Image (tube, rainbow, N blue to C red; front, side):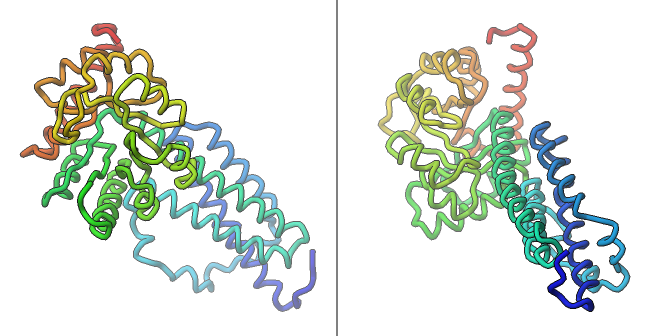
Length: 356
């Protein structure tokens, strides 16, 4: 043990180390439980467990013996944000921040306690940064994999009310699309929509704008054929966020998958004012996607309740809609209808009643 500090400071040092070792282990346990039960990821849960065990080696009975909870003024400190969590993502982020802050304290004060403690906890802090990126990526991909209905928004006075109504109906994937508003307006709307989606544990993506996605901490972006390359978007967004790409032909699909798209849009299936002047790709392209796409994909373009069965007959499992929900009088009910029909089709296919 390094004795560079005065003997009178020793109890204070021990209490600081004890408190932050506790914080680190508690935060990691909260994260581990979600990895285990929420994501069903044995690999991520094992990594959390390994970190906790490494930290426990430093949490000796000597340090614990200096604990004085009764006289600790910190037990009375609180903040309104600690009293509630808006969703799983916020809960995880809060505990990652807690762990990382505690590790930094252990790194600095540990230099006074043991010659190896500072460097050990410095490396552990970097491990936790990497774990956070991997967990967020895993979390987002899991939600994406389980999302079968995708809402692409259109501007309107009731935008927030409609999106929330759809989220209340079970929607888990939203894209903010606005080609005409100025950047200040789009930033404010994107921030509010992002918070709204995360409150319901839904993914929030932004059309085209990688910079806005970073600014509001969105879950990713959706890129058109004329937008920046996926590789460049990945450099800006990092590995933990999602990138989707619109495709209109088998060649587009092949290229998007090779470039690393996490999902693709397939269409437009029917002509739609959202893609004015764009010829419909038709059901033939949807059938091609059924047989050839190796990433999640959504049929998009003019899909509504009247042609839904025709789209599903191709073997399609996921659809993206705009007007069907944005123009609906009861967005919650329409969302529930689409989700129930998508579930019905998947259930029939799993029982071999419908062809895959």
